[in-house]
Image: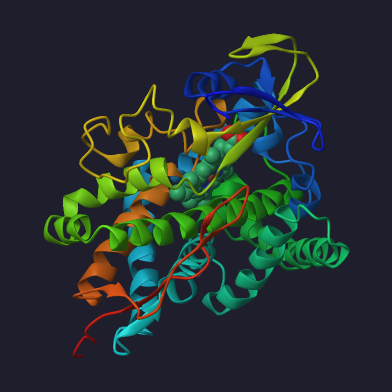
Length: 382
Ligand code: HEM
C-alpha cells in the first residue's frame, strides 16, 4: 500500500488510508487535520468529550490543565515509588514459580494498577478498575458492533461514573497529594474541570495509558526473546532499555493508527484529499517506511537511525506517540513504567526464555500486541 497506493480510498469504511512517513507526519502536525469527530465510540465510552477530540484553544486549555501532572519532576518526586511498588507486587506473585505469562500476569495489570494508585484510589479497587478497563477497551475495539460488547462498555462507563463522582467531590473538599486532587484543583485561564470532565479524563487515562503501555511491555519482551543476543545485551547494560523501548515502539507500535478529519482540501502523495474526508493515518506503516528507516523490517536496538539518548527524544523519530498537538501526554510516564518494570523483571527472571511450545501471536487492529507471552526462568530463591 505504502509503495503502490499511498492514498487509498477504502470503500467499505468510506475513509482514506495514508501510510507514507512524510504524509503521516503532516497529518499529525498540520492543523488542517482535526480530531473533532474522532473515533465514534470515544464519547460514549468515556462519558464525555476528552482532549483527544478537541482542537484549537479548547484543546490547549484542557491539555494545559492535565499535562503538568505527567511531567518529569512531578513523576519522579511523587509517582516513581508507586510505579516501583506495583511492579514488585506483581512480580512477587510469580517469581518463585519459574513460569509466567508476561501479558496476563504482568503487562495487563501493571499500568492500570499504577494509574489507580496515582489517582489516590483504594488499592482494593485494582480488580474493579481492571474490569471496567477491559469492558471499555473491548467497546472501543468493537469493529463488528456486537451489541453485547457495546452494552457492557456503556454499563462500565456508568458504573465508573457512579463510583468516581462522589470521590471527586470528596477530593474537592479534602484535597490530598494525589493525581485526582491535582486535577480537581487545576485551573488555566479561569477554566477548571467539572466532575464529569474529570471522570471522562480518568476513563481516557485508563484506555490511553493502560492498553498502550500494556502492549508496549509485552511487545518489547516478545521482540527481545526473539533476538536472544539483544536480550543478553540489555540484561548486561540496563541503559539499553531505552533503546529497546524506542525500537519496540517503532517496530511494534501499540497504537497502529490514528484518525483525522480534513477541514479543507489537502494534497498528499497520491492526490488531493477533499475537505470533509476522514483519513486513517497508519503510524505502524510510517514507522517502517524504507525512505526513512534503513532495513525497516528488522528489529535492531543498535540501529544507527535510532537516535541515541533517551527513548523520549527518540520518540521524535518514530510516530508511535503521534506528533504535534496530540502528542501523547503520558509518554514520559510510559517510558518510566517500562524502564522500572523491565529492570525488575530482568532481575527476577534470570535465563529468561519462551516457554516450551509457546508461539506468541499478535492481535488487534487499532491497538496491537501479543495475545499472551508464556515464559520460563530459574525460580528466584527467596
Ligand atoms: C495520546 C500512544 C501511553 C495518555 C496518544 C496518541 C498516541 C498515544 C498515538 C495520539 C492520538 C492521536 O494523535 O490521535 C501511546 C503509547 C503509549 C501511551 C504508544 C505507551 C507506550 C500513555 C500513558 C498515558 C497516555 C501512560 C497516561 C496515563 C494519553 C493522552 C493522550 C494520548 C491523555 C491525548 C493527548 C491529546 O489529545 O492531546 N497516546 N500512549 N498515554 N495519550 Fe498516550
